[in-house]
Image 1 (cartoon, rainbow, N blue to C red):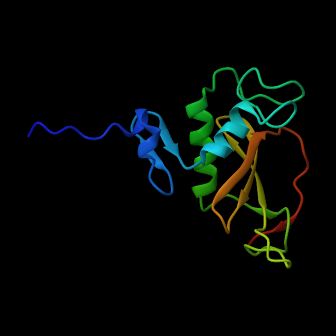
Image 2: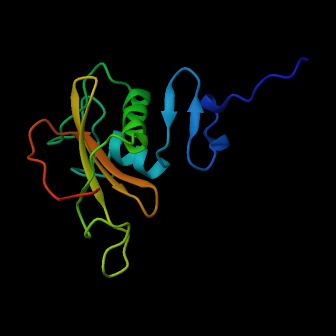
Length: 142
């Protein structure tokens, strides 16, 4: 059998719904929009946490490359032990007005406390960044 497996980790166009597995790099469940925002930003002062980070933004450690950041955030959104809090809405997937609710978590991965904002109704990560000291707040999600 001379057929080789598809090279998913080098061909983003082969990304499957719900993410894809990078054999040596970890799991990637983030949309291209979320990755751009978290890693590089959307303009001055809007996202961009890959080392050295945008001005005024807390960067991930210098030793964390883009694949590590994406993997750790993907791990947070799939871990059933993660404690989520309602950032908008009252704990369900939608707000009273019908918009997707946003949930937030503060989880430590490899020594870094990461705040992750997630929309459970859409499955989209909105943002994720190092947040060493913000007080946890919001309605706990059961």
